[in-house]
Amino acid sequence: MKMNLSKKKLSLWSSIGLIVVIMTYCLMVYFDEHPNTDNAYVQANTINIATQVTGPVASIYVKDHQVVQKGQLLFTIDSQPFQIAVNKAAAAIAVEQAALVLAEQNAKRILHLVGIGQESKAAGDQAQSQLDSAKAELAAREAQLAQAKLDLEHTYVTTPSAGVVTQFLLRPGSNVVASTTLFMIVEQNNFWVDANFKETQIARIKTGQPVKIILDMFPKHVFHGVVDAVSSASGSVFSLLPPENASGNWVKVTQRFPVKVLIQNPDPNYPLRAGATATITIDTTKLVA
Image (cartoon, rainbow, N blue to C red; front, side):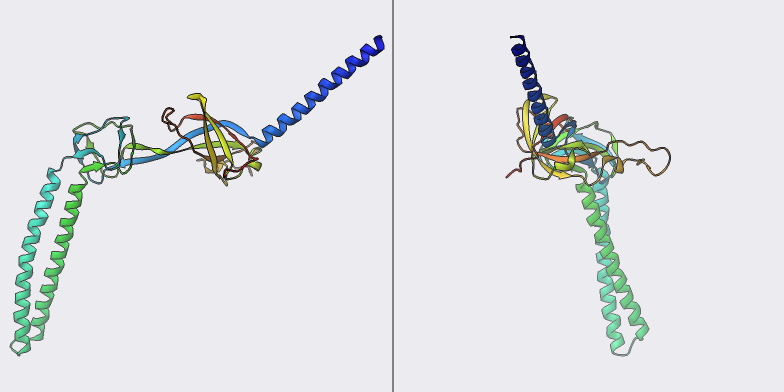
């Protein structure tokens, strides 16, 4: 009786051990086929807004964190100096046009006299040179007017794309310098996740595989995505001071490789924000159709 009981216990523990081994193996296979990481961050296209002319801000039409549409007016720069430049350039053109008319008349007269032998060829060449100079001067003035008009247009700063205004600190009277970044527009129509996988995880990761994405800000909502690209270099390669493993004492460190994941089902009820942390799991057994 005791012998039978001992055999039953041994059989039970053997069965439990076998189940544990099988479950452990299944889990190992699952995690091998479904690599995941929480070293992942939401990204979006950002546009640096800068002016093409220098001057004081005249009026402001947006505020920080405001949603704007493509072509919407953001702010204006005092246009008076640029309007004056346009007027001066236009006046200069009028003067050069008058000078050109005189140069044409003089050249026509001199060349006629040269043709009938009453003026030397040198006089004709000089008249032609004066005419060419007047034409060149007029072209230069016209170019100045075109630039002045363009500068005047640039006093009206509009957004090149729809998005959300970020880091907007301008105030009326603030002096802005051309080509200096003032604030940014974060686009809202294209989000992705940059996930940094250990080099021991990327062997199975391929473009087109489905991805489950969970953001820390929305832990109960699942976003779905697809692997768009796998980096050909680790993040440390692009660091300011890349490691020099060929010199000094060397310590092996597991590298991480960025994987770009496109988000396929954005939901306005769960607005995405650039820089948000995420946890992603890739199903390496499938490909998105």
